[in-house]
Amino acid sequence: MILAPDTFEAVFDAHYEEIRRYIARRIALDMAEDLAAETFLIAFKRRAVFDASQGGVRPW
Image (cartoon, rainbow, N blue to C red; front, top):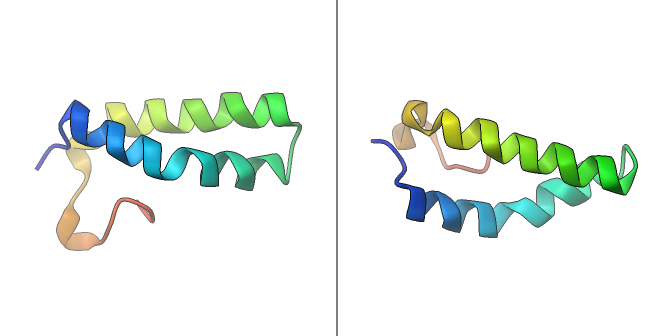
């Protein structure tokens, strides 16, 4: 099942800040924001490979 763009928006809203904070503990904040955004861009492009039977979106 491919995550629809509107469904993916909910995933972004639910997890972006947590991922940004995780990265920011390791590198500069401005770079962390860019890297977190890039992480979600890649995930959005690869959303067709998401398999809910393998677990939730957070570990994916």
